[in-house]
Image 1 (cartoon, rainbow, N blue to C red):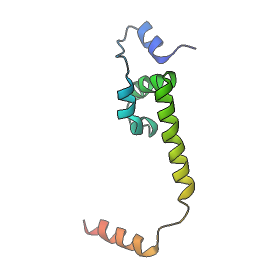
Image 2: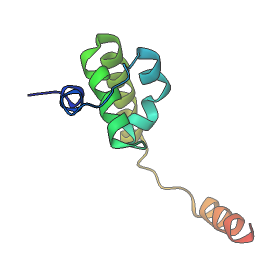
Image 3: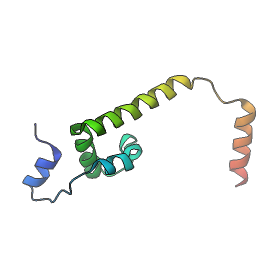
Length: 90
């Protein structure tokens, strides 16, 4: 299977090389899918082929899973009322 970079090169597109620093700087956007598809593909391709970036990505995903599992308790009603009141005033 060809990578997205290989396909883009075959179509004549210039692909800027991705660095570990870019992956680290945009890790949250990458995992949250808050970027353009082409940029996400470029960063993901690097993260999947670089052992250090793979480890950083997996560590963040693992941390998110732990947080998700730990946050089962709903917010108190008093907090909900304060938040809604604050949002409706501003």
